[in-house]
Length: 269
Ligand code: ADP
Ligand code: MG
Image 1 (tube, rainbow, N blue to C red):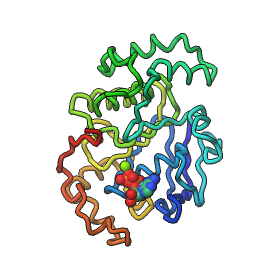
Image 2 (cartoon, rainbow, N blue to C red):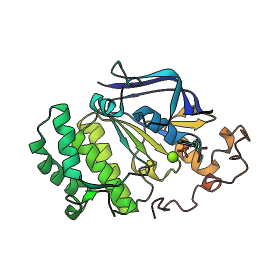
Image 3 (cartoon, rainbow, N blue to C red):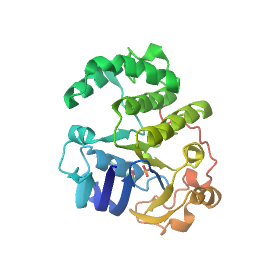
Image 4 (tube, rainbow, N blue to C red):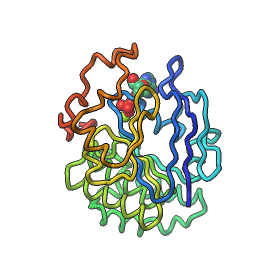
């Protein structure tokens, strides 16, 4: 049984606090959804948890099975069992997916020779075209293919806890179903704990969360069961907004004013 414990996490970019005290615990086998309007700080939370440079931690703690993650570089957080499926996966010219995973296996003491078979099996399960396996990582892949690729890496690396940042963006219905099923199987087969970040309910009709949190004003402002997803779809996030926080966001009608506004938009297109 693993446990990611986020306690009083305050973080931001230089000169601006974006997260003002996040408390959240994700255990093996659980699917937690974090929802919130555009700009609420969801991606910031995922980046700070994974240790992306450029963000400052101002207070609080994050531990995975008692190991303090905030003091570790990103690769050690990964080795500790944390995985991030990025909202916008980056392209890495010149490095193939199999090489990347083989290096990760070698670095953690797993046998890299097992990687090609694992990758082949996972690619088939989630419908990731085998043509892409030897191509440079994410280069010239569509938004949906990149998300399948992220899911494949997660399944092969088999982390304890996975953060999925807008896994649904850029995915069509079939791809969304395929990756959601795989994530769900991993929670059951291997006890994967999931922190699924999204601002549309679309993902959560496929990947059914146990718990739903709303992130607003830098905090988790409510935590409820999956029924909250339907409520948010009807009402949006207005009930959780404190109004203008001075950064100009409040005046802008984001996609959340209409939860059905272009849920298929591909951020990478
Ligand atoms: P969400 O993922 O919920 O849409 P983000 O975490 O991406 O929100 O962003 C929260 C706020 O912080 C936004 O106003 C965004 O512009 C700002 N922000 C996040 N990361 C950075 C960064 N690296 N540099 C400047 N501003 C940032
Ligand atoms: Mg985001």
